[in-house]
Image 1 (cartoon, one colour):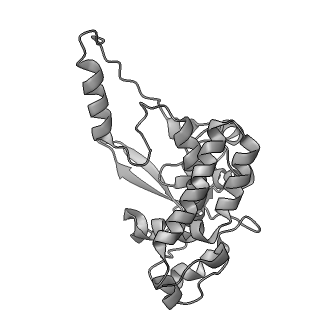
Image 2: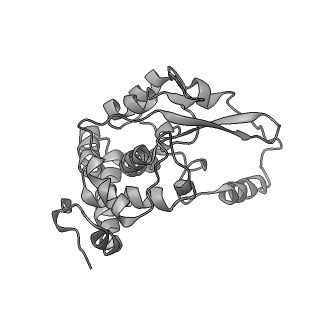
Length: 244
C-alpha cells in the first residue's frame, strides 16, 4: 500500500490514488482534530488557528476532502464548468490546487428545487474543485464547532439525524414535570439574509478564503449575479452552523 510520508507526496497517476492507505490518512487527520478540540476547550484561539492551518495544508486532509466530495450524493452534479471528478487521475490531479495561494472560487450554478409548499428553493452548486476546498476547510472547522456546539442541536452536524432529535424530545417530554407546550420556530429567509460581515467576524477559519466563497456570485441563465449577502444553499461554504 502507498503510505503518506511526511504528508507532502502528491499522487500523480491513477495507481497511487488507488493504493492510498485511507486508514492512515484518517488517523493523521484525527490526531490534528483532537488537538484542535483540546485547544478549543482551553480557549487557546491562536493554537486553534495554527492547528487548522496545519490541517488544511496536510496531504492527508486534502485527499480525504476529495474522497468525501467524490463519493457523496452530489458527485454527479457539476458546477458551472460542467466538470466531474470521475477517474483516479482526475482526483489525483486536483490535490495540488487545494491551497490558499492564488485560489479563486468559481461562481455557483443556480438551480431550483420544489418545496413541500409548492414554492421553489434556490440552490447554489459549486464546481468540484471548490467543493473539495470547502470540504478541506470543513475538516478543520468541525472539531472546534463540535466542541462548542449545543448538546441539543442536531441540524447540519455529523453523526446526528432527525431520529436523534426525536429521541431527545421524547426523553425530555416524557418526564412527569415536562413542559406542556412545544414552540416551533423558523428563521425566515435565513440563507438569503445572513450577514457576510457577521460570518467573517464569528467563524473561526481562514477569513480570506471564506470571503472569496461568500462573494463568488452565482450564474443563472448565463448571467453572473453578485452575492452581497446571504449564502445560497447547496455548498459546504455556507458554513451556516459553524461559529466561534
